[in-house]
Length: 355
Image (cartoon, rainbow, N blue to C red; front, side, top):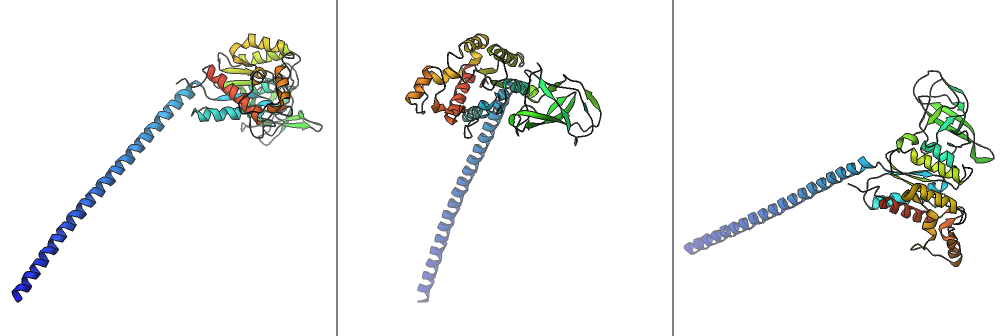
């Protein structure tokens, strides 16, 4: 009986040992498999990170090459460029969306100001510089405001710096002194300046006498020369006739030096008959760099826009249809259409994307 009990004990012990060995073997293999799986996942993660870093490095290198050729896109103009009545949509904003959608690195700068005429726009760009209207003296420190007068290079009236925004003007330089210029409007006309004030920003107290006719070097005249420059003027005054408007556009192109990276947007208001001389002269002068925006918007109906009979009657005359307008300006559909047209022209002229 005792011998039988010993046999049973030995058998159970052997079974336990065998089960232990089997469980240890299963555990070790499972642990090994899990470790191998973990190592694989770590390796895959590291590969993805390396590829991501490589892709980011490649993109950074590609962006640097693109930006070495073109720094961005600068859009100069009045309320049509700013996006007045567009409910937050502007043609520069549309170009910015299209640029980002195609993964280009170019910043798009909206340099449009509501209410400015052509001479004021071109003064900010430096094409037809602003000058001081009369003698004044720079004195005191950066807490002082000194009254000054501003006129166009040709002596004509201009009205910059009277909005809360004045892109392409400040900071500026007068008589070698870095400064900021502030403007105040007339009580009965918010588009006209009553007074200008000079505020020096050079941390100096040196007294400098500034004679009338001294050029005001705006930030816009220096900061955007390596950009694609787009100009829209002609619908807010600032010129006596079509010939002067054409000459102003020529001055803008000339101010860019040898660069061919520019586009001139034609006058938006009026019909084909009203603009016949102007359009023909602009096409002859600027060729592929001129965009007859009225013709582009009235030559055919744009996809996604609902036109009525009155719109089609206007389009036959070369007039911007009401479905693209809001008051005297474009609506969001109109601005989006202009942005798409100008972006296609930029690409057609191979101004961007040449790596």
